Image (cartoon, rainbow, N blue to C red):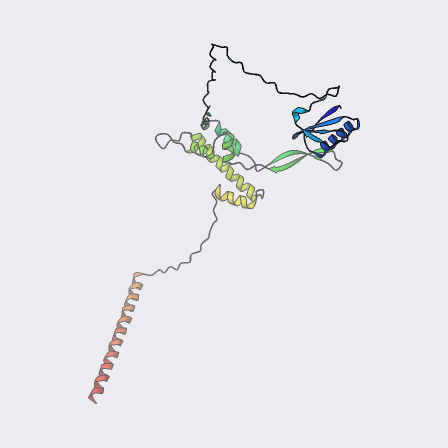
Length: 286
């Protein structure tokens, strides 16, 4: 009986249906179907129940209907001739376990060296207007492209953004602007120090112009004016003071009047005390 080998690589619904169709076609022609799967080989013969066999026992049948069976070919080890010692097996050298090489440390890059051209670059970066005009392509009511000019707000310049453009930090800019020579008073980069101050002034001017013109968000403009431009809220205080101008004679007169009133008070107290004592003596005499 001829045998048709069918190989299946999965259990999806589409593959299972195709496999069943191939088995049915083979059985209809009077041939057996050997389905090779992951769990072994299942043989479907016409009019019989499917049976499972080891995978090595079933291969594609030849045209004469006989099945081929494969067997593992065994090779016997040759024994040494009489009187000769068997050669010693040479063991391959054992290579030491390779240890992973330590990760190379990334060198810390040196900061960019100061250059004189940074002065012009810094001024150009901050010397901008609050707004600029750009040409934008749009469509008119007929769908045709037209070019119009629009006014947009420029990106607010910061020292951090400029420092990043030359591959340094804001602290490096500050260090360049304040660095002094060994004498402790002479600036190393006086031109950059002056340019640094001008850039801060230009930044403050943008805050004032953009904030007062309503182009910047009000809360941002207020916070930026306090932290970048040095603005502070003004608190008005009204102090009322009474100043009395008096001459020396007037002060002496006031002092004498006070002393006279004190003396009169003491005399009145003494008179009342004497009157009480006299009244007590008069009562005892009766």
